[in-house]
Length: 449
Ligand SMILES: *[C@@H]1O[C@H](CO)[C@@H](O)[C@H](O)[C@H]1NC(C)=O
Ligand SMILES: *[C@@H]1O[C@H](CO)[C@@H](O)[C@H](O)[C@H]1NC(C)=O
Ligand SMILES: *[C@@H]1O[C@H](CO)[C@@H](O)[C@H](O)[C@H]1NC(C)=O
Ligand SMILES: *[C@@H]1O[C@H](CO)[C@@H](O)[C@H](O)[C@H]1NC(C)=O
Ligand SMILES: *[C@@H]1O[C@H](CO)[C@@H](O)[C@H](O)[C@H]1NC(C)=O
Ligand SMILES: *[C@@H]1O[C@H](CO)[C@@H](O)[C@H](O)[C@H]1NC(C)=O
Image (tube, rainbow, N blue to C red; front, side, top):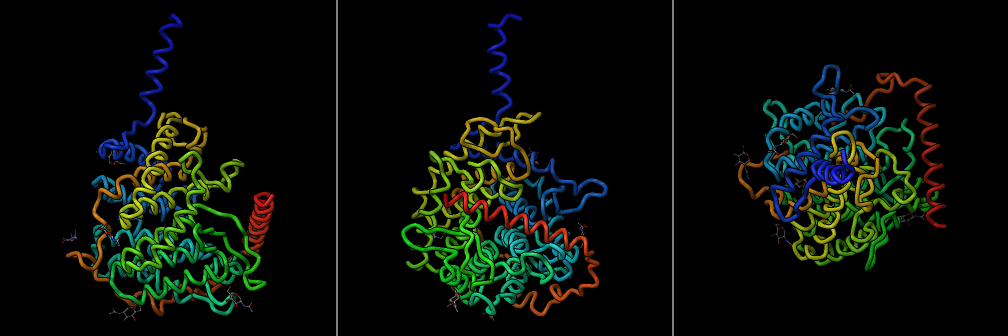
């Protein structure tokens, strides 16, 4: 074949395989999002013999499934694609745990407050989207489950160290129990804010305010014209040795929570706090394209971190819906990032596998569940302002909930001997923690320099 024929052929090949996206056309966005969802489901074994319903394949942890399904739920709602309903429903039902609070017994060796929080955020979305309620009359509705997550987290609020806050871990024997981090507290803050707006019960507002004030007091969040959100600290030294890494998901969880809370309270104070967070969030854009600044530059994002932009995208999209006065400020950043993400979704053998680095203008040879999740959620974020706002108690036929759900449950009083934790597992966990801490410390030193 002549070389002059080869070039147009190559061009044709590459254009048919990349993901097409017209940011002004809902059908185009939904079609791109659907393709990305299919890529996510490649990592899902729950429908196969021996697979676990609701979880993705190793090495993806339990928490990430909670967040991943939340993105698919938004897609189900925005694009009205019922073909994903079954997988969402069965995942919620399989992972809700005996007490409907998303502390399933078989996760308790590893489950932290943040892990429970991400599943809580998923089931909260199911309530807000009026997703098909449990068909079994003995199973409580999605709102009750959200309240159970909230109640069990709030019961663990720990004033014995650092004057408050949630610890990272739920269970004393897990490494990380002596650490208080932003993400666990930010999950509780967002749950409280959304429950306030959904139920109209102001006692959730009080909790949200307590949590946020604690984050400011510890200086995990530095408020001001532009907020800084840091990672967390060990409880020794009263939480003062702060790990100053900044992750987009911590900004996202707080921005999302503050947007709901402002929408509900209409208070100037919350608009000011939200605006400050959004100003801080702009550091996560390079030439108007979203990136995970703490690890993407050095190219050392781990599996969890590769999915953080998904949390961030969802929150910014929701903010354009719930706080119209910030639409003009946020929307252009979402549009340019979505266009860049679509260009990155041009890899793999299917030609539509998404990459990690959207600033490149093409696929960067990275792939995984996190990469797919981020692309899905940046596409979803464009649809948020066109769709109805999340429902609340004023809408007909939504869940009734149970304000006391999960209280006095025995989910966290598991008998240690039940768990058969082998000494070698604990030693392994200790080594993993030591390595993680070392990486965090080296990372912080590197960031400071
Ligand atoms: C609906 O979602 C499925 C599963 O992800 C996908 O294969 C299908 O193309 C989607 N349908 C439409 C009309 O986009
Ligand atoms: C955990 O238990 C649930 C039922 O409570 C089950 O559906 C799931 O498959 C189990 N997960 C694992 C990883 O074994
Ligand atoms: C509001 O929530 C609080 C705390 O969860 C609860 O004690 C109170 O009964 C609730 N009020 C109403 C009207 O449901
Ligand atoms: C410990 O930290 C909390 C929160 O930052 C602060 O309110 C408290 O005063 C500190 N306590 C001591 C003894 O330094
Ligand atoms: C709350 O959200 C609704 C629905 O998006 C919107 O119409 C309303 O303006 C929002 N309220 C505030 C205070 O921004
Ligand atoms: C919620 O779902 C129920 C049951 O399908 C339905 O009767 C009700 O109208 C729905 N409410 C809204 C606001 O969509």
